[in-house]
Amino acid sequence: MLKVSDLTHRVSLETDTLTILQGVSLEINRGESVAIVGRSGSGKTTLLGLLAGLDTPTEGTVELDGAVISKLSEDERARLRAQRVGFVFQSFQLLPALTALENVMLPLELGGHEAPEKKARELLERVGLGERLTHTPRQLSGGEQQRVAIARAFASDPVVLFADEPTGNLDNRTGQAVSDLLMALNHEQGTTLVMVTHDEHLAVRCGRQFSIEAGVLTEPDTRTDEEPVI
Image (cartoon, rainbow, N blue to C red):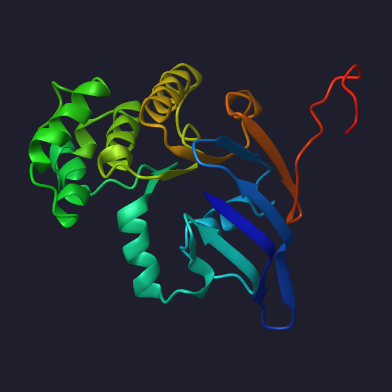
């Protein structure tokens, strides 16, 4: 589903060049759930943006579902994201003037879905917000807003879902409920999940975990002492 080769990303400053990512390579199979764990400033959000085609790397390639997105134009990447990618952000990113139902309907309408309202209602009922369809984001709690965002992310049946600190703005209890919902929906729909987080308790719920520090990505060795080295 995702193949990254020798990914490096640099930003030019006034007097210097800052290397944010250095030589990142990884492969993520269809249907896998993967967590990338790192502290603030480690490069994890930059990596997520490159994997999703929100930005292009300085060096290296990113291949998503057979398309080398690092070589596509901005418009081509936008079309690919609309067709194959879902997002869940820490800050929810809901449109404040739209109701919960309208926020979930929007990607369906843009994608030409034949029954956007019906599907949006079904998704909001699935995330426990069937009674909050007409509420705007300001009328919803943080946990409710993130539930709307999760429903919106799954609306277009994405092949891969990117989540950036999905419980970062929530208290522990609400964050646990939201993470339960995210993992359940992801399992039901067979979506490939790529999540960046600083929360190791959330990360271990994924099938694989990577660590990133100072722009260098590593996959910890999870073998026990009894397992043979092959």
